[in-house]
Length: 424
Image (cartoon, rainbow, N blue to C red):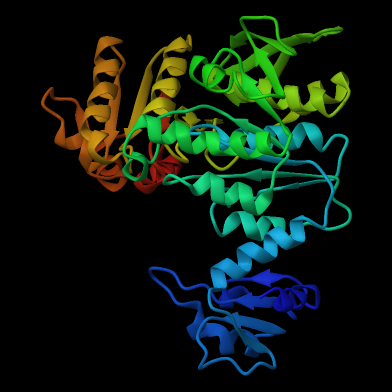
């Protein structure tokens, strides 16, 4: 297999999609549940690919189409082979909530001083991590690699590909429980990142205020702590919500002014502290750290505020699980605005705990007298109290005209609440 790694260095880049082939790219035919890239290898060559890797021997010609036993394994081993050519800091990020926002904030801070490779979007799985690593070049001084997990062992696999020497677990919550079965499975899997970094004498960042993570990592070496409650390397303070987060922080020899940000939700406070801690660790000046934090503007339906002609929208509907939804609702309640209403989409991939977790969210809304509407069949199946519930966003839109409201949009990606933005 390693003999075929040289094909990558003779090519212009990597592609696993025959529809978007760039000239002289290396096409790797991946076989998935719903598609078989081997069927498109010859088309990829015709479209301009220089070489193709396949796992169907009948297609191989050993001239520009080469056979391997497992194309995915080839991609992953190639990515690790390429990563080891670079003696630079590799930051691994995982967690149940806030991975992508934290990644973007760290990138914003570290890019003030370094040329950084950063995971694009949420390319954080067994395909996305290798594809990101294969973008490394001699200009890069640092890389930030987001790592997602759907089942036990996923983070271990990704860590062995990326070999990070720095890491952060944003938090441990109830996400993708179908694959993990229970909360303990989530915790064990996320800690696989720290297990790898600890075994290679790397450093990782830990939230000292997170009792679960703090206790679970006390026996690890090389922890760098941040907190809003106890003395640590970075001590942060939430200064307020307007609805945007305002915060300050101090280190051993510096105390920042109040920094006003462009992100909503007090749950993002700790995401900011992570980025500040990494900036401090990598010796970015305090002035540049503060500029990065205050200038960062979120996108892609994550912690965004949008004023329309009719309403003010708080858009946080890229994804949702019980802990992130509860955090969003708690933050929403803290806002001083009147006429608030939450539009809540179903939380998907929760397995056997799905009904119980949706009930907890409903109970929270009722207990706090929060006006809300639900979208999705799970919430609707629990409607015994006469609240407004709809099967999907199209049904919601046809029956609701909201105006002069502050509206929270929160739900799993599959519910597609972002499609309501144009109508609100």
